[in-house]
Length: 409
Image 1 (cartoon, rainbow, N blue to C red):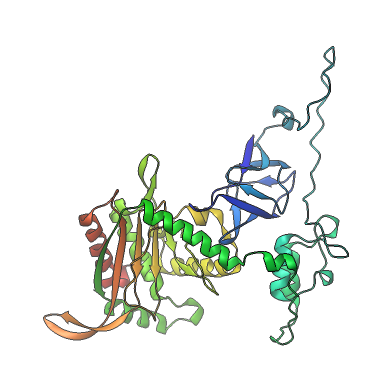
Image 2 (image 1 turned 90 degrees about the vertical axis):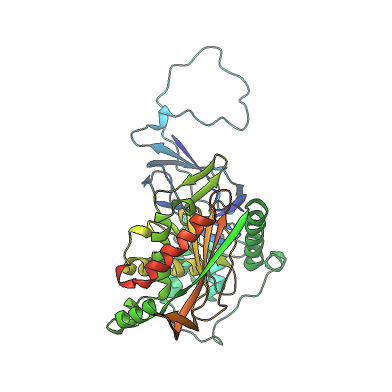
């Protein structure tokens, strides 16, 4: 039997609110299946199970705020029967035990526990918190949406379906719900995200002895190659410079393993794969850095597709828990317009962050001549408990070399 518990979705998380179940008792689940949506300070995160088997019971209700490690569900292992698992201890002890043992009765299968929906306000509509939030964002009335949940409760997928079927509306036609007193008192999601970022970054600067190395590299070969490659492609298939940065960063991290992994209670644990955290700015402010798994093994086109997917889901609040905790090095690029250099703060428990400034047109020495070139400044933030200047400089040298031969990435 496996107890599916509230996972830790970041160094700054100590609790989360269950907003949606994607499973019900009796469902078969496989390792990696998304089973629930949890609201954290950084938004709604899809969480996966790492146990295969059959869902026996959901032990947490929608709307509950639970600490990390609190049980959410019971999952029977493959081939395990319900009667083989000791029943959970009752909350209230029975009055008395029988004087003589009764013959063993055939155990009854556990009753399916209905997935609870949020209680409706007086005269209102039953709906999950996630559905209420999405309906407010889309300007939809819950009473106009057909619910598919228990007792006709409106679920998140019902709201999304209704939103997709609705004719396009202009801003003036969208009805904005009046804020309730409870909503007025509740901190805004952005304020909560800023708290989460503040907690993680304060911990990082307090506990991690940062040091920094930087290098300005010639970006002209990559810029020219990118323009030539994209010339014959449809807009949806074109590559962005960010994909080259992620690919080069992942390959460099694979060659310099002291920057790729986690610092834990037992010390530095190197990762055999490079799960590149990609820093994504959210609309309205805020930042997340979900992991792009096995980036060192993927082609530029695959990385570009994965980056588009991550950005779309991050801005829609549909990232997965594993993406939030498994990054082994983070790559943060300012894009085409911005400051020429950025010195980043490491995301614990990682040990390095690659900060990439906006490309700049600068005088640069090529073949003993000063010529105008597209350049970019790369700053590597490193945990000095794990790495020293020589290895950090090697990482930047490898990164530079890779960017000079973009056709080989």
